[in-house]
Image (cartoon, rainbow, N blue to C red; front, side):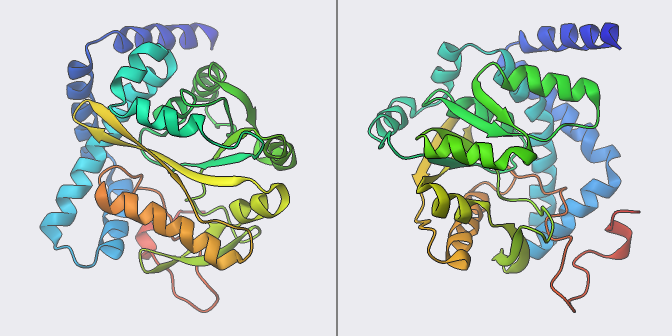
Length: 296
């Protein structure tokens, strides 16, 4: 297994050295391959898009669908950039780096900062970019594939203060109490235990309570951080959210609305193949047709 890992690392290192223009061309080709071969995931993505954008016709949906798979292909190279690109080069790719850096420098260092981000194709690049503005920690679950898990761990440990497992949620909150910054992605269905149903693109979606709980227990501030792709560069969005820890539904609606706003501006830059609406309120029929439900 080690030999295979070394071989994969070597190939990825070579790919990372390619000019960015060539990386994105190869990425789009890889995305085209994904689009051609991933029948089930493609149909899940199409269904999510149709349900979330009922005002768009089939031609518009298909265009977003194709572009989203192209972004998936490009994201492989963005992951490599996140792993091995120097801070100096990455800063040059963020067109408004100085503005965001100055804004972050003026934040209250006595309060914790919960940095929310989304499951975009290039989420590892988003996480890496956030570390340019302040020391950050984050949460990640172990990947089933050992090679993939080792790649992720070796990449993230380079720039994160600490990587928490999902079982270390109390330790993460201790970091927030100490005024540190922690990353968290709230936009997937993590099951009923710690979530409630909140509207997301007009559909009920299980939304995790953690940001609300974190504010109540640590008095942290909550921000949304994202990257908008601009040709081969990025515009960083860093926004403080009105999440106060006083009303659970209000806080989670605020977060979901902010995520919606980003997606509406960048509909191709989201992981649509994920079953975001897999769990439903009692008595409500399945969101997905039977052929798109996970086989158990």
